[in-house]
Length: 105
Image (cartoon, rainbow, N blue to C red; front, side, top):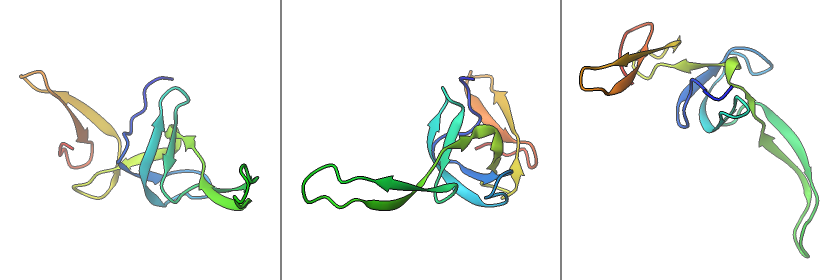
């Protein structure tokens, strides 16, 4: 899978898993793995070892990636979760459309 329906900076809603129903901003997209990292969602605890002298180790909370199929795009115009439609205009430009309200974004 090398194509993901969301881009970095999009607002998405998680549709399955422990964070179902929560919204967040996409921080990173990995098309090769088909995964996305959503800001403040899917938090995992990670144990860090001190790597240099004087550096503190400990337990930190980090956002872990989740499959892109588990998130739906939220339309910035109508605010609803939506599927994407693509439209190619006469001048050759491409746009993403909301399936609910039909607005481009």
